[in-house]
Picture 1 (tube, rainbow, N blue to C red):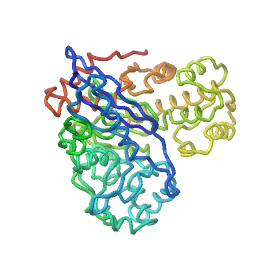
Picture 2: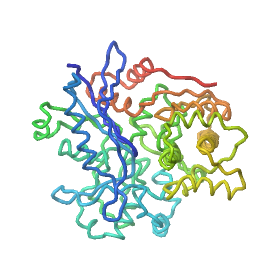
Picture 3: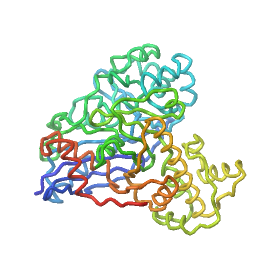
Picture 4: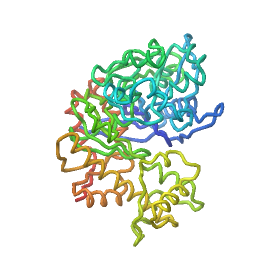
Amino acid sequence: MQKCHIAVDIGASSGRLMAGYLKNQRLVLREIHRFDNHMIEQDDQLCWDIDRLFQEIIQGLQGCREQQLQPVTIAIDTWAVDFVLLDRNKRRLTHAVSYRDHRTDGMMEEVFQLIDSAEIYQETGIQFQPFNTIYQLYALKKQDPEVLHQAQYFLMVPDYLHYLLTGKMANEYTNASSTQLLHASTRTWHQDFLAELGLPSELFSEPAQPLQSLGMITKELQQQLGFPLEVVLPATHDTASAVFALPADHAMYISSGTWSLMGVELDEPITTKEALAYNFTNEGGATGTIRFLKNIMGLWMIQRVKKELAESYEYHEFVELAYQVKDFDSIVDANDTRFLNPSNMIAEIQASCRETKQKVPQTAGELAKCIFDSLVESYQQTAVQIEVLAGKQYEAIHIIGGGSKNKYINEKLAEIAGKRIYAGLDEATAIGNVMAQMIATGQVQSVDEGKKIIAESFTIQQFN
């Protein structure tokens, strides 16, 4: 039986359990269970089926022995901002409402009536997105105040899944930093903001730093699975885990998936008026750094187009089709909120091109090229902004995550940005998650050693 660490990495469209272990000082990853994730409607809200997600985790663990694996630790990462509330008996009071639900419509503007937006940014360093946790909680207070009154515990999605495993609660730091309720410098909950918004401060526990043990799974789960298992806090924000896997420190990166997160690692937050104007965010990193980055719409757009097209296309086919399109250069603003969750993505892209008097994409190839070119344009603009704000030039961009396999985007960005593009680590989040477990348990002695192992374990492509 191969001893291993289990990384549970759940994104907006799918989740996976990956087994990781060292062999000849190289990190080996094996996918052991994959499952679908999608929003469901509960009480007229778009929600995550969090109970099914937990059952998928247990199902994946139950299959380990058949695959000759002996898990010793497990850690969970997911997307940011979404949460559940529990009552005093530690029973869940709320659904895991999705950030794409419309309950936050208009909430950001209402919060600005209570707290000046410039003050929010200066104190938290977090970019303004209508779905940030701060606006979700304010919406809940307005729309269902009784639930908020009954609540005793606030847990973000990975925190809740860790609680189901261990019975222990922790607000992990990297994910907590995304809420726009954490003080960027002190890295504690902003008590003044909570008070001004009428949110109970007792809901929140002191943020817990990653790379530490949370304890063993419950006795009930040990009996169900047939083995003990230690739970480790990774960087529970999936982007933080992905960035933790970067072989190079303080590099410009794009974590490319449903969202594209583009930024650099810094020692201190940048909360200037210029950073606010460009809507950059300062999120917590796994090792105490600040992930200074911007959210870009990402491959969500092509995911929706794939779903809407009657014909069945694989993602690599969209890349091939984009190469074949000639004399079509229409682009849209990939960060326009109109693309966040439209009823029809294709129609929205076409309408945007029509309104800006550009050629309107009709074929699958034209839609793909329009989306990919629009993303490259956004990446290039963001790269320029980062260099201005950080006061530093970067010679290369590291693209990690599933989107790193998009050769069209990689080549086009190298050409437009005039930088070397390093692409690889398509399972960067799982890699960072597993490495956090190895460091927390002492199998790997330091972060530097972990980065060296990662660099020597995986192939990175270079585009000039």
